[in-house]
Each structure stands twice: as C-alpha cells, then as structure tokens.
Image (cartoon, rainbow, N blue to C red):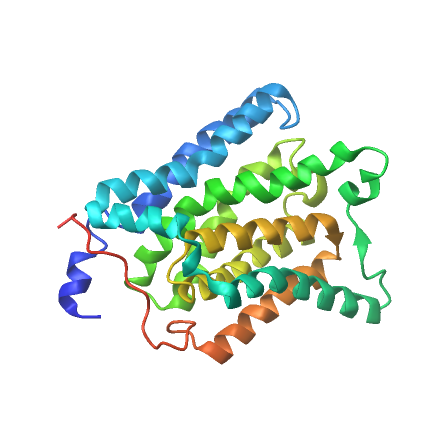
Length: 288
C-alpha cells in the first residue's frame, strides 16, 4: 500500500476504527449496563428488549460509519458485500459449512481420547422431541446476533484495521475488541455468559480466547470471499448453531479454534491470510 493511500485512510480521520469501537461500545453497553443496574434478567420481557437493542450496537455503528466515511461507491460496495452470493462461491460455501463441524468433531474426538464424553447433544436437540419450540433459542443465537454484529465488525471495522495492520494483527485486535464487548453479559442473569460460563472462571478465559481465535478464521474467509459480509454472517451463525447443537468441553472446543488459527496463519501467511499476496482494499473514503 502506498503512503498516499495510508494518508487517505489515516488513523487521525473520522474513519479511525477506534472511533467506531468507542461508538459501538457506547451503544451496546448503555443498554446492557442498564440491565445490570436495573437487576433484570435477559429472559424477562424488559431484559430481552435491552439485550436486543444492545445487540444492534455493532451493526448500527457500522452502517453509520459506512455512510459517514465512504462516498456513494463505498456505500454501494457495502450493500453488495451483504447481498451478493456470487462473492462466496461453491468452494467457500462448503468451507463455511464444514469448518465448524470439523472443528467440533475433532475437538470431541480428542476429548474422547482424554476420557471425556466427547459429543454431548445440546438442550435444544435433547428437548426437541418433546417440545419443538426448544430449538428456538438456538435458532435465535444463530441468526439475529451474527447479522447485527457482523454489519459492523467485518462490514466496517476489519477493512479499516487491515489498512494499517496485517490480516493477522487486524484479526487479533478486532478479536480482543469483540471479546471484551461481551463483558457486561457476564453480569446479567439469564444470559449464556452468566449462566453457563461465569466471570473470571477458566471458562471465561477460554471463551474470550476462543473469540479471538475465531476472529482469525473469520478474516481468512472474509479475505478469500471478496470481502463478503454475507459469508461472515453465515459462518458466524453456523458456528453458533453447531455449538448449540453439539456440546464439547470448553478446553477442547476453544483450544481447537486456537489451533485452527495457528494452522491458517502458518499456511496462508500472517500478512493477508490469502494466496493472493495483497489485502483486499475497500473503496476510497471521503474523510480527507
């Protein structure tokens, strides 16, 4: 990338990804911290509203910054990346479909070798025969959060980070920001993080590390699918759904996402995580 390109996309401009992160945190945490202050559960009516509105933070900020930073070409590019299926292609669609399943199966097999149960069916699967509605929380987890989050995380922020950092560095930065963004959820009863993980536990650190590792895999798919937001929404949602349907001990499950991130970096290289040798570039912005 040339120096002139770097100056057009410089960190001192309104396109600075840290300004996006601050805005996203402000939107999301305003509602999630309100839930903590009010002492409401996320499985209550008021809590659910606060959860859902908070979830819009990354997407709302992402769309806002796209319209603030980019010209018409960049805005059209954003919506094309969300709607164009051809960017993904059959090969990468299969990778998206198989990758979370493969990670889960391998993690379960390794857990089995260490004397664990290996695969345990999730609650939605176990209860489906008696109550088909039991699958609804898993379907929610696999659809709405990925859509609302990825419009910002990968729809806007990843491009901005990759202007100044390698694909690996950008992934790690975004992964840490993404992981910490979940922090208030550990203090609200009724959330997965509070009920199943707990703050400061071994599971907490595995969860946070797993998100950072997943961020590397997501960048790998993103950079190899012409910056497709749709591909990442599908991947994020499918990861969530598979993890809800089939449960594996955290140390093995998240550990294998870390191993995958190391493997992808070793094979495709930290600079781009692609075979192309160049990072995909967003359209020219107007914040100069």
